[in-house]
Structures are given as C-alpha cells and as structure tokens.
Length: 340
Image 1 (cartoon, one colour):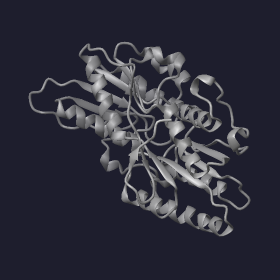
Image 2 (cartoon, helix red, strand yellow; image 1 turned 45 degrees about the horizontal axis):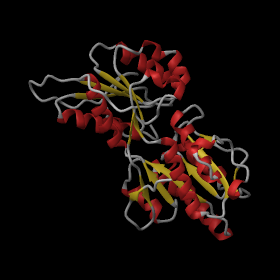
Image 3 (cartoon, helix red, strand yellow; image 1 turned 30 degrees about the vertical axis):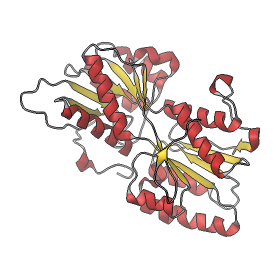
Image 4 (cartoon, helix red, strand yellow; image 1 turned 120 degrees about the vertical axis):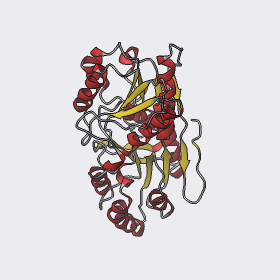
C-alpha cells in the first residue's frame, strides 16, 4: 500500500489488530492500546512502537489498534467500539479524527476503561470524555509553522495550507495557529478566519486543500499548486504525506520547482514531518523543501503509555502533556522549535 510502512512491521488481522512486544516471564502485566486514525500510517506506527517499548520496559503491553487503509472517522469509530468492548485493556489512547461524531457514537460506550487522547485531541465541548491529552500543542505548533513562513517571506505573500482532512481536530488547531501568527493576533483575540491581507498575508481562494493523508493525493495537490500560472508564495503541509515516498516526490516535484526557479517565482515549502530518514533529509538539503517541523512520534507514544499507566494505578494525571518539536533547516543540526 502506498504511504504505508511495510506490513511486515505490523501484526495485522482485519480491522482490529495490534503491535505487541513480548512480556517478561512472570510479570503481572497491564495492557494498554493506542487507537490510531490509521494504524498503517507511519506516524502511528512510530507512536505505537514508542508506547510498546516504554510498556515493555515496565513489564506491560501496549497495542496499536485501528483501521488500515483510507482514513475515515467511521472506520476509526468501529475500531474504537471494539477496543472499548474488550475486557483485557486497562487504558486506551485515542487519536481523534472527527470529535463530534465520535462523541455521539463510539464514545458513548466510554467510561469503563480510562481514555486519553494522543496527537489529536477532542474538541473543547467533548474533552470531558477523556482524562488527559498527550502530543503537540497544536495551536502553538501552527504558530511555529507560521514563524518559519515569516522567516522566509518577512514581507508576507499568498499562502496555501495542505491538510489531511477538514474534520481532523489537530489540523484545524494548527490552521488556527498559522492564521493567528501571520495575522499578528494572540489566541485570546479570537480572530481565526481566512487571511485577507493582514500583515501582507492572504490565502489562495481554493485553499486549504485536503488530501485525506494520502501521499499520492498530496503530491497531486502540490503539482497543482506548482503549475504554470499559480501565484502561491508559501505552501505549508500539515503532515509528511507528500515526501513520505521521497523518490516519487523528487521525480514529480523536482522538475516543477526547477522550472519555477528559472522563472524566478519559486514558492517556499514547509512540511510537518515525524521521521527524518536520509532520503527526507536529502530533499531538504537539495532545496526541494525549505524547512521541516518535526513531530516526535515515538516520544508521544512513550508519554501516552506513562499517562495511561498512572491512570490505571489510580494516580492523578495532568490534563495535557505537550511534547516538543524540532526545526530542520538545510545544512544545520535540528533545533528546538522557537516559542511564539
């Protein structure tokens, strides 16, 4: 499947399946699960591995559960209902797709098993259904993406945001943060609508674009934005989908960027990443993207396990646990993302 890690890395069986590491002999183990938006997507594989590794170190188990293939909240809801019906889980972490729909359907069965959100939180109206959130501070992450845009285009420009889906809570929060930073207002000011010239920034009329987190679709969207006649100055991608298959990205996007270079109107491309392999780093160093802002998938998984374990042991937990992100620029070591 394109855009997925090889299935040999997963123990997959039907809709509900898991990644399981062996337990120490004789351990009195607790069992937890992360329910991904899509369990064969590379970010969630990394988060699952981080959770499983942290659990194994304490004699516990952490499974990665969820649908495979095309991401959709109904498919995740079916996986979540199955997880909530299990009697062998001591806690569940949920990466929220569509907050309102899940609250009205699968999460109606929540309550018996401690539930946290990870990576993508429930919307404020539904946050009473979970005990904690572990992951990025998504509005702040959006502001950090926008700060990179300001670094390359201090005079402003026309922006297009490429998102996974219009219902994804974490992406909606990142878009909100991007707009707030470029507009120049703080979160408490309340203005979150489309940019219309504030501080020199506006949004292309057909943007944000949505690709349902599919690599091939994301590259097609980029191809459209880089076509002759396009006037986009900055492209911010809220996931790593277009460059996950690095060779495909290079062959499809590289020639378009070279032609725009010859015309003197090349846009800035800023991409959210979660795994920095040599091929992705080479794309950056070769100028096929200008900056990456990295999500620490393994660390999000580790921290999710620790919060779930505390809940299972009856200990108090913070409402939110934020994991730091790092900026990657060509030719320099990664650095912590700056505070907005």
